[in-house]
Image (cartoon, rainbow, N blue to C red):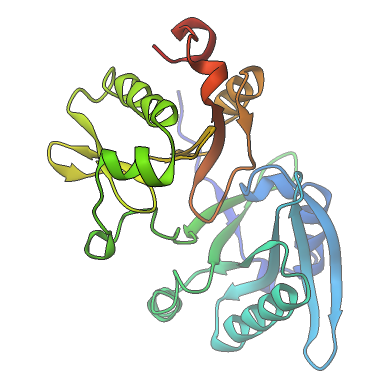
Length: 280
């Protein structure tokens, strides 16, 4: 097949296509940014004393919001500051949402990346580089995520502050024998794909050890009558569908930790089969 050289366009110097055109394209179909199932919440949102936020996007489920600023050409210091100011105002005004600052530019410079790397992880910031490509049918846009938000560490990642405990502590003081036995059964399930997995008892949760090292791909919190199971995994449609079809009480996906929580009732699953519920 013959190779065709792509003709890229510099939107900053284009006589017709400008920032408003780019904003309109994104507003019409925000999914082209690759942020998942997001919808347009507002555009040109007025912030007194600062200006207008280009786009405010929101997760279709309603849990997260993205404060999006668009800049043609290369990123600069004023653009970074303005984006973070909009993000800060929105998160203070609407604290029930998980807010992410998003910068879209034609050129995400190395200097920009060096600067934001100093505070990324404390401020959820995402940088997306846009490339305009001219074709026979029109102009296409390619969005490349150059900088993604850094997730917070998962439970138990800081090994030095974990307080040790044992099985007797959980059965006698924190939970009950039946719910701790549920943790055993979940560990047996984990061994089907990680044979060396063992339970790691701590005072606030039960995690996992793999080959003698802490590896908390899941966290268990037995209670008197239920067991809360937090599983660290990317949010994918196939797994969401499987959880929805199960008998588990599934809580919302937590984007800060990259995991989902389930509640398992000890009485319900005491005799459950692996086919019905995934327990042995």
